[in-house]
Image: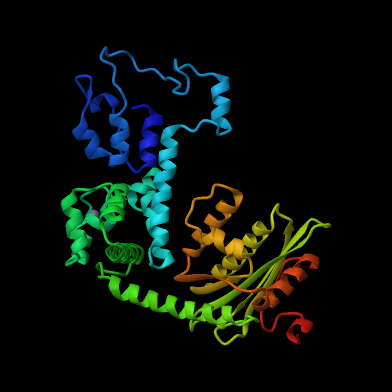
Length: 415
Ligand SMILES: [Zn+2]
């Protein structure tokens, strides 16, 4: 099979045996519907089945679909390059992804589970099959049952070793009856056929199963696969209670005219960040402060970078820096606050954004995955004064700084 066709299919998580040929999918000048539907998720299978086949059995040739006669022209290439003419399949790909993204953002599930499902949909969770696609030298077979290819859906749904953890889950039973096997088909089935509550529970249970699988595979000492320590409904209840507490706090602070700094939940650190700009010197200062539940400083930081094009980019860089530092220092539960509503909205927005702002926001969402829990808050300027001060100070500071208690300038300690 042509390597470009093969790699396109592989990017959608479809693995084909070595030496596969397109002709194996064609029978008597007609597409072999059964094989194609068995191999590919329905949205790809539908695309393939709409390709007309020649009745004359002529040789394969490449053609340029944006010119009536199929010959490449610089003019049409240029129009596509500048986005005047979008190939239809890219549009449908983008809207497929966008509908999935919008759907998972509207669910009331912990952000790490939301991001897990976004990654599962794109076949970028580290199953053996996905690792192989990224040229990691692994077998591609499921390390638990050693009997089947380790696809995303196998790992979390159909592997015989995890089936027991789905016992009694009515959504899982229904899903098995549909015969959906590709992860994208499962995602669309979930999206289109389940109530919001069922979706949320199903997605949490799948994540719990993925978590026990990962901890079993990465912990050499574990002798057997342990069932999840909690179940999806308990996890969801805990999450919703935490969100409720947080929204009560936010509501409370929003109604007071001078918003003040609020301590994070117990066991969580709060990271306040800000960016300041010196247009004349073309410098942007990023600064912030990590504090514990009792309000004491854990670390203060600041650094200067070349001034980005927009203010919101600077604010996003400050958020990224705060997360990077919290990760480096080994914190697991964090609450990060920024006084830039635009930056917070960029990170929490459900719509896909292909601009620099969108890609920086996406990077921040991925960084959040490394924490057990991560909350992003928008606060008023008045609740962010210390971070603002540090970002201003960073502009004139000759070098990046990280201050910890017992190792910070005297004037800062006395402030
Ligand atoms: Zn398996």
